[in-house]
Length: 236
View 1 (spheres, rainbow, N blue to C red):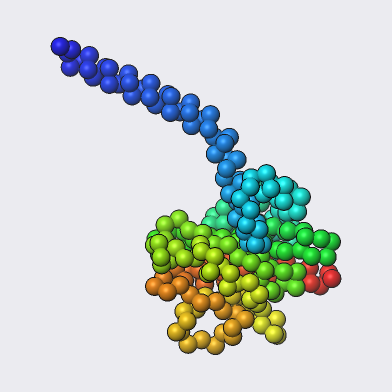
View 2 (spheres, rainbow, N blue to C red):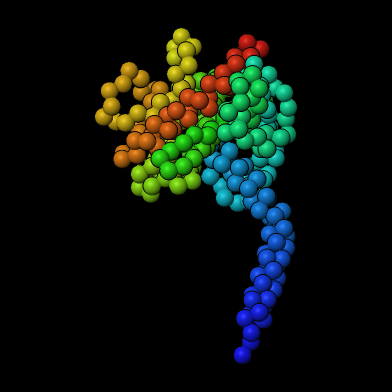
């Protein structure tokens, strides 16, 4: 029978070897993990412009040929390109407004047709909610939207990731007739509101907190880009 010392040392040896093997495996898989994260971001961006393909090569091709990634500041000025994917929105919104750097993606359908894709970050009932919303080049009309979440309740708050909820955003307006920012508001069907149909979508039945989180997320995420949109409108 082995002594307690032998058993103890054997257990330590197995633990050390296992830890080393796991470290090597994690390091070896890191490039694949990073590539998958980037692919997921590209897929989500394209979902906001109603592109539903899941083919990796197709996604990479469309993104490489038609999507331009920019970084803008609070004054609506383009300050960089190429590292938009590295920006963490939560961290930027925690900074003073003047110090924020915000990512923006431009889908160039043609020389005269562009879609401006805004990333969004918010809070649902159980955790983060996030997504992208695309604005047509009238800088008012929503072309499409994509939402996802970390841990919302299936059948309730998790419905923000379902097509019926997301399809409601198509054709909605973010600005009033007198050019005042309203956003697209997420409002429960039975709620009394002054928002007209072109500025509202139906909230999730049984998902009040997630609906409110999505409503706040839309307002907070879209408004910082209005100065950039104004510059483009004035230039044209």
